[in-house]
Length: 433
Image (cartoon, rainbow, N blue to C red; front, side, top):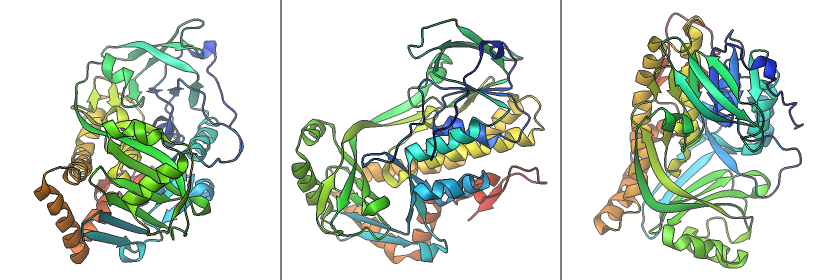
């Protein structure tokens, strides 16, 4: 994949009236900009870091697990044909608990789909998105640049941006728009400056992320393994490798990161088992703390929070980016269906918040419950988790409901999430079983 041709915002553009100003040009912000490609909205996309590096995929590249619903979204956006070359299908999911007899197995054939989801290289997804966004006539990319502050009145939002790699170089730029979208991550500066409150919970765990190679091919199985020190996931990726997300107690992480590769693999093997034979190779390891962050409100006056700026959840079940992409698809649909008038209207923002509420609540409860139940030191709680896996494996309707939720196919879905373009039908949204 060739490197996109970046378009930097010129100073002559900066005093222009935009309709939508997106702060954060990562996968969430860029997805929204691209989703609105066929609209008449004038969009400014502000990103602090240069993105999209050339070169071949390396062993250690980070990945994201796309649910079936997210794949349908990217198909509807015309991106999947290119992304599929960098994607590995998940055809089966195996959920188990170390030291217990409980297990749940979910198959793509049972769900009637080609794959339950796909694991995609982050770099490829980012480059694909920016290659498209950089061609859009209705988008100005301002990069690198950082938000300094913003003000909101009844008619518009005014955003002050510091351009340059040091975010302090050159002349401050002033942008005007109708809607400010915060896609700037869990430590969102937009959310903080707006005074929007969050509830947070520190799980006391840190995720170790790496790529590992097993002796045997993964056979396109995604493993979710619950252990007494935290859940671990091994997701299938290219060349027979697996993408590892291993949750560990905070006090154990430094020691694990300091191990030699062979010692690290031995520890991981002890926790995971031998379902794919021996684990023979690992790439570089990185770590990030696990904290639940949920904004009490997703919207404010002329302001919407998307993705981690609104909800940062535990990685168990791989729902984070998929939840964010449903934010994107919903907001994009409401903006297009709003006849492209005032993008920051109270009607659009309130409907966006109402629409997202049920999905957010159920997904956050699911991931939070899984994270807590299977790491709770109380014996009764861990036994209850194992029993729950057995029951789910035996009772098909329960397994079906769990699969539909994690595949992004439950509840009221925006058109993009069911593979439809952002046209204007006579009704909004689709109810999926």
